[in-house]
Figure (tube, chains in turn brown, yellow):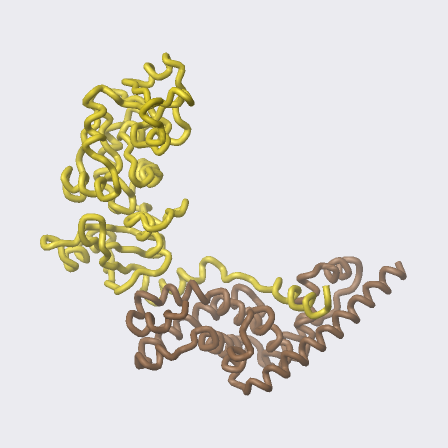
Length: 189
Length: 270
């Protein structure tokens, strides 16, 4: 896909489909990270690609050729997703991520759910402080490189790296605590 | 597994693919649904149009048929405009490479947009897609395969109206008597040229049935095939036997090939 920016620069209408097909999982994933609802994430992702297309229509060719599609699209998606969350809820978007998923879910059903791998990781991730949670998710769930992450979040490389490391450390601590809790619950029953 | 690997794989599993409806919604909203390219074909340039459902129209480009004519044709067929682009999306490009040029193995599923055609024509054209490069099958074979063995003439009409020639290889459908048959994309001469370009020996193709040979068998396997079937071409001359009909073959103790599934024509003329 290395030559994609060059193709976008010379034939936007002909190559835009490749841009969409090659990046839809990323754009959808990034949107999902913030809005946490797949229907709304799809709306956000659609809007992100539409904005991207209109922006590319206006950009000079040189600028398109130098474009790095992944962080560029991820940034459009994340900004739209934040707007979307802001519109739907009056309080801060990323705090909402933590609040909603952190609702305690006890009882036998809650325990079964906690044992479920996917649910567990998604909940542990959501319980992280927003700043770290988003950085960890973009790095390890959506697979952005540190370089791309720094561009996506528009923050210095060192700062996003340290957020990811700090986030992973917190996640590890939460995971250990979780394992201990499960062991204790099982021992008690 | 150590902790960081565990965490990394746990998080990777949270990745979810975009819903299949996302890309079509984007293209629809931007009006990017229909486009066409000009590409080189086996006997001269082609216009290839494609949309969300796949390739929708193919026509030969040439002095009598320029881009304007093609755009006009597209609008008349589908009732909407089509934009010219320099290069097709990779998915479409791969299909052109495989189906038109034979530069790669064709995929099982081919994105062709036939939804506007009657059900029977769709069945016929999807069946024609299965005929391998460098081989031919009679109209009667297509009719038998789609479960309407007597509908040879209807098959002929459906094949003649193929909106996606070259990609759907209607040139590989010939008459049971070995004659090359009609061709919508330029007549019998063009059909012969396309088959030759694919490595078919069209003289041989016509010569065998003229001598009464419809099928070729191997006396080691006791299997009979259409002459152009890849299994028939593997039979060495010493083991090659010829048959006039499936009855002949059966009486001789031969069974039909599972690859080319040979059948008789229901009528003499077919």
